[in-house]
Image (cartoon, rainbow, N blue to C red; front, side, top):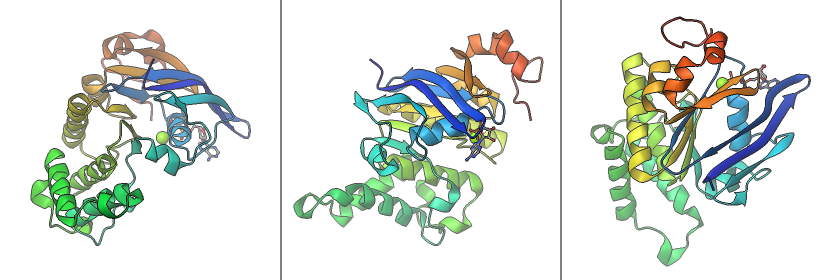
Length: 252
Ligand code: ADP
Ligand code: MG
């Protein structure tokens, strides 16, 4: 059985069927890309999976637990993390302070003896920053960072929650191509090394095809294809919803 299983998920907004009977499974350590043109329903899927939105119908299970209808906080506590937008990082705090805050919040439910000592949190923060490649920036105030570095801080904040599944909706939005590919390569190596399942959306098809183990294509809310990158790249139906001859590129 999959670590994460989505079955018959649908969500409408008035007359717009944003997500229609979508289902898939995801295993530990696997990178699964959710792609499709603008308006295909990717973000709506994410918002349902993180508990921000209730689905009309459908069932989502994580590690055997039904999570449909749980609050975002309850879903996060089960080990499903997500990357947040820039606003979520405290811009006036340093990189290290942000990560320490996230680590303490993870430990928030622990009391007394079980609470990690300050020194231990500091060491964990240092290790996390090294893992995402920004150990050298730990004393910098977040508000002064370059955009790509801020994205790495966001990744460190998500990892601070020790997720077993990471949901990333457009984690590289606004980044230059080389930077996005580097970030996705980092995420892929972390996923494999630490057996974290990752579901992500990404507009850069090169990043998708290089780093996803499997790709799901949505069009107007429905899943139209699912398979390994090479099969998706060659799929006539997928190519039809995108422009471009040599590479699958998003329709803008
Ligand atoms: P994607 O992330 O693939 O670009 P979205 O999930 O954001 O697609 O949107 C899917 C469809 O649902 C679009 O037609 C969009 O206009 C509509 N939609 C998304 N969120 C809302 C909302 N909160 N209220 C009404 N319609 C929405
Ligand atoms: Mg979106």
